Length: 143
Image (cartoon, rainbow, N blue to C red):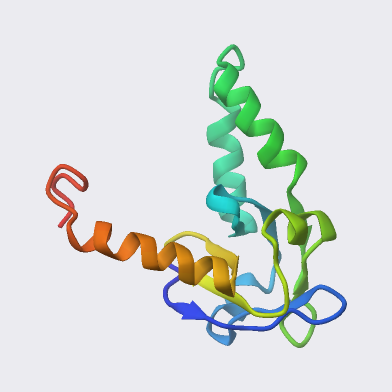
């Protein structure tokens, strides 16, 4: 489970330090791909495999499944962190998420999300009131 918000910096070569608390879990490999709201999703290899299996069983006749799968898999990049715990984010993914030097790495349960620091703060500012007003209809029976 991935939790918390971390603020690493992207270096000139497009590398980012993974939060230290997650390095062991991600040491065997990970997959980075496009996420919603112009962030990047980072999945441990096993979790990406689970998602792959779920999408494999989805009906190919459903246009939304085809469209989502194409973008999701075409933009995916498998990475192996280096000895310092850095990953290289491919240029196309950096451009998609408008990543510059300051980033936010956000724990999102089974994945990490990588955001530009400004984009994350803007998203958070917009969503905090919605979050605090969430009612039973939004998360039925969970909380």
